[in-house]
Length: 181
Image 1 (spheres, one colour):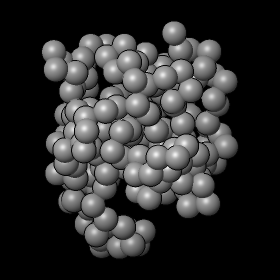
Image 2 (tube, helix red, strand yellow):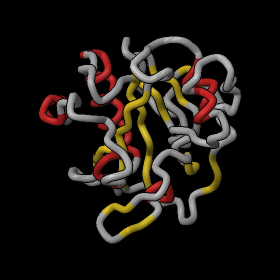
Image 3 (tube, rainbow, N blue to C red):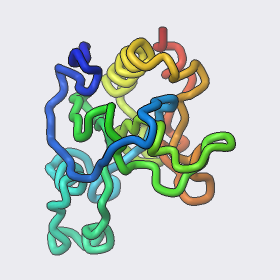
Image 4 (cartoon, helix red, strand yellow):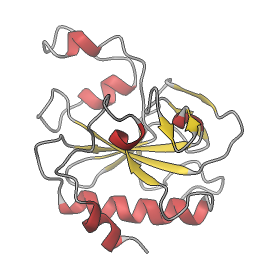
């Protein structure tokens, strides 16, 4: 896996550009936030995550979509069940993935975090290709952005406790740690 010369893009990723991003306030990247997403909930595959992150989710396709179609959200990267990597926002820009959040004493984690979505949910184990691709991506990002410390990989639930549960209890943190350099 390789980054573009400016460190903004994973060269091997399929790009689907999201408008739901803006400039980082100071450019610092010091945190990686792992999320879990499936659309509709508990279902995998299909175009729905891409549609959500590009503001093209049709509310009448599924009852759940009517509740989220107006959201303006994104993530830097999605890792599908088979390990496919999709990138929506360059790492050098702020993706809108964490919402109201706090890491240590710092508020607004989108300002200094990279958001990585895993296709999954709280009740289903994540797949081996997802862990392998996630570990490779984290190792690559840490080399490019040295401000991301060894402990600066967290779940969405860690920065938004009580509001978010992802990546959920099925995410195996020990397995991820064993794959990191």
